[in-house]
Length: 167
Length: 211
Image (cartoon, rainbow over all chains, first blue to last red; front, side, top):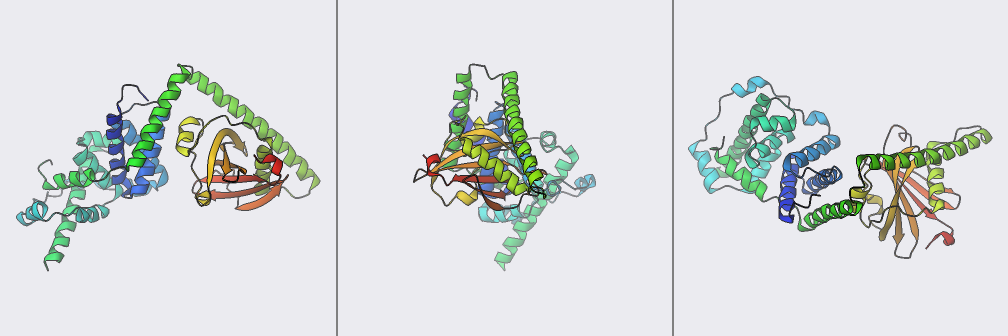
């Protein structure tokens, strides 16, 4: 490991790797295994000590462990032409006042691994669609489509949940 | 995209997900260990050096395989039927175990081992079958099982009994390997498959071989 990388940066890198792994598997123990294997792979390769490399190592292990077909995004590029659902006032109120992490977790569990992955990379890591497309090896339009679809699914799930609670 | 209020909550959700302190400590230590090794090597571990070491291990593996294959062929000539794969593997493991070769690597955890045994095609892991037993790792070395590069770890239990645990990646070569238990040359050998790995545990009956 490079001498120049201080502990706090390593710690941040590992936390990001773990959160990325969580977006893929949602199970803490499995995510810890994935980040450990990705980290070992990075150590063996003697770096580079950055997120893209660690994420790539984690992703390749994830693909090895789970069937690839579950991860390949089978979304038509035409899907990106679906109209974007504007956030309703009711939804805004839910998100701002009554938000519950468990509900979001439940909503995320409805997504496919690749949808959660795209959501994590764009929202949390702040990658552009092109950067995500390079990471997940899929066309940029597919990334946009996945992101849009993931948001719709999450929003619908939250709407449904809160509607049931209101009843 | 950034104006979507969902973003804030997705960020908040993932910010709440954290590696446990113990795991974080382990992984940071692992990185430091690799740095220490790197420094002690003083740049000796170049690509070609590692390549040479790999070839050396392969040569040893090939020699051991040759001896084993010869033994198996001889046995096949004596006995009309072919020696089944589990028995061949058990013979190979017993032979390795009885050699009591010194450890090449000093490690006490599988995490450390994974960072040291860089020529393996897999990451050495603990078997869940042994989780209930109390033992400590006392070093490891490369070996081979049916010509495949494998890891051989020396385990010592609380009574001082020495066991050798072998592990290699599951492959087509080992596809017919069923879970079995054999006694070969005074060594009790258990062989099993777990996830994508094949494990073999050897234990001597002869007290002289125990520490």
